[in-house]
Length: 134
Image (cartoon, rainbow, N blue to C red):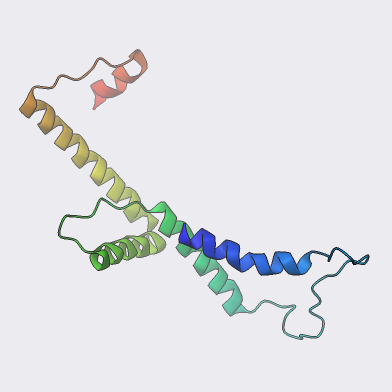
């Protein structure tokens, strides 16, 4: 949410600069002809834009577990940055991590149901074949 707010505030200046004034009859454009290096993108510009876009996408896509009781803000931020870094470098690890969490959540739910005698609800016909295979 903070990243979205910063992006909107950053773009407001460009939007305001491109709007014509109320008393003006001619249209204005942002002229970059007096800046010789403004009409080309350098390798650093391209790489930094790609890196920031990937960082923003992975930061919002990764949803880590709820922090522990004794886990502070710094630990939580470090864990999230570590997961984001892993997703940035090797997305297949994130898929494996999600599958591992799913299997452990299913095992924990089964242990809970067995311990407290909770019966599973009847499934619909389309899901019954899937549950029988599991």
